[in-house]
Length: 185
Image (cartoon, rainbow, N blue to C red; front, side, top):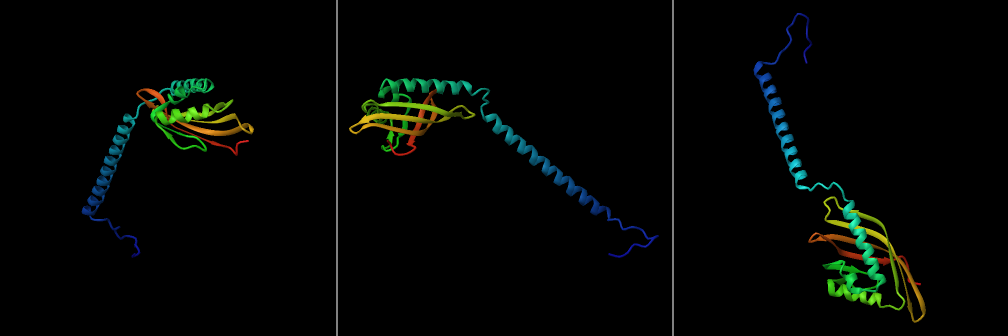
């Protein structure tokens, strides 16, 4: 770059070049503004599509109440009532047992479980999470199972995950899985 000598005029870009720079900046600014407005509109549209959930505690409370009724059905050894908590296409995935899908299979699975001699089965929920849109929830917890077999009392301790979903406005079990913490004793 040549040195500038005193008394020499500074080099100023021609006016046409300045216009191009200003127009380029104006175009860039216009495009960025347009993209920003489109982004805001898309986000606002997505936010409007999501239902606003002011309070999930009513859904949580309802599921807890259903859990208490389910516990009562287990204590009463009522396999039909236990199966009634599942959706018609629900799945029961117990440890050491085949997959039971649908009302008939789930009823049979509960019947096998509850017909064991001196069976006692209890559940303790440790975490219940309801989705923001209120159409699905999951319950994580522990269980204790005991029953008599030909060799004496058998005890099992394990954990479960139950996925709840709304069917016709009512909470139903979509999937229920459990597994043992170790070998039955």
